Length: 259
Image (cartoon, rainbow, N blue to C red; front, side, top):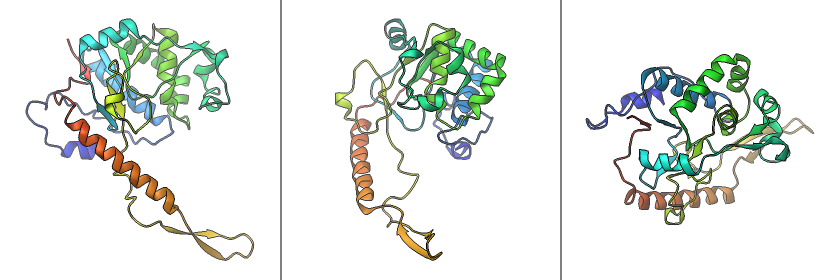
């Protein structure tokens, strides 16, 4: 991703608004390296800028409402998320069966969770979060090396316990939306990337060991029915994205909103 971003020739009017973190981190899904990447960007922002809000986004996010400082101010004043007591959590649901083993789950009484894309914290909260992780190395190292999607609850839980909370600007982790039906009080949604694999290719045949006679049999790794469902899903997403392009204001504010 770093190499690809450096190849982009940005237009003059946005060249100073796009900042690439010089620290390269190889991240992987369902792993704490995703959280580590977020905190590295937060650290870079804190050390180089004064900002009012820090918003976590990914290449899978699309804005459908115009976002500015006044609107974020309103959300912080009216929709602040402050967490809930962990005794009310069903540990057999969602990812809690794994998260319950983390240090932050056990040291705090309150917990919180959200899709990380669209998570927003203010300047004071950003500094407190960074300081907390710097002063609690064992907690930080555990989260960065954890084999699960801790970016969905770690920042949220920390902010709910050491600060007044955080806000969420998105619409969850779903990927099929009609933006005309989305809330006017939120600002972005999550889509899918169709560049990870060519799903229009025939299913791959993979040799699988047969324990009975040690011979190899071939099986289809992807069922045609699932393949067609994915193709239909992509077609729907592409249609929505074409619609969104006609609606979305192209002049989005900076991800880091300066005074």
